[in-house]
Picture 1: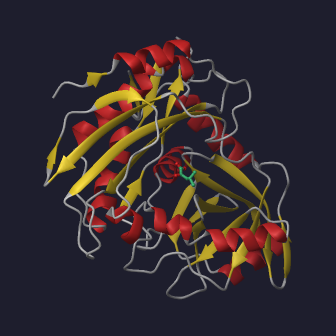
Picture 2: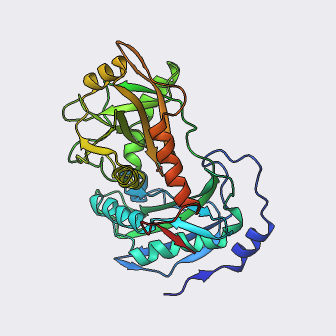
Picture 3: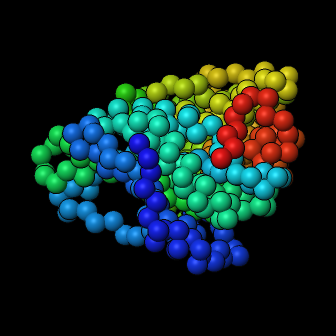
Length: 350
Ligand code: COI
């Protein structure tokens, strides 16, 4: 199906001036992609001016949380072209999230049309500095207007975009969250749904008062092994071995996580996906056996962890990124930003 390009969207882009200071997710591109679905039938996609949405107050998304989202990035290459990183992975994960919430999935071709159209028309908004990119945020929601607890028959799919810096600059201070859990095993922890992030906010508020940046969530079933951060996956380095929590149903299968595992193995590191018991981890940090820990995600890239705080005390790692985190971050960015050969076929030029 062809995509409709609203001439007003094109003229909004022509008039747009990008602010100098970006931050993460604060500057929003003046256009968006949208498509609607009724009883399983999707409309054609449209690129339209960015504007507020009109939603019926009884829309299911507002009451029963039928919504999921994705995050992926468009990069500027040295030849001044624009490339997307593994967009099919995000399309597949959004289909998985939609299925978990009993929503009409966005067909892969429509998802890809959406992210490619926004990235292409917003090519002038893709920053050129290393570590910066055009962050794309596709999202899907159930819009049927009635208060019965049942799956919506109608959906809206949007892609908005934000020229951004990395979500975290590193030197992150984590707090071990031992009271609350984020997403139940068998629930939605491995789906990218807004409710998982909402469930993290109370913890984030508490730890910020104590001077920490991010919660380190424990597995909701055993409450003793590490799951992930609120919006990033977790890695610990001990000698030549990288440990990361296995995909156990309550953590998100990060695209950056999967890519780093591949890069690390190709660089000769052993990567163990398994259970990381928090008390054991803290012991290894205290004794220096755990030399580095870092978090990763599309928005955050690779972000080093300098402190893990717990009720019993504060466990310190280096403030500066460790050599493993630094070299993996650089290797990933070199591929994403087009400086290194893409042996993996991860990048898609537009
Ligand atoms: C991403 O990394 O794309 C995410 O969705 C995390 C978000 C909390 C910024």
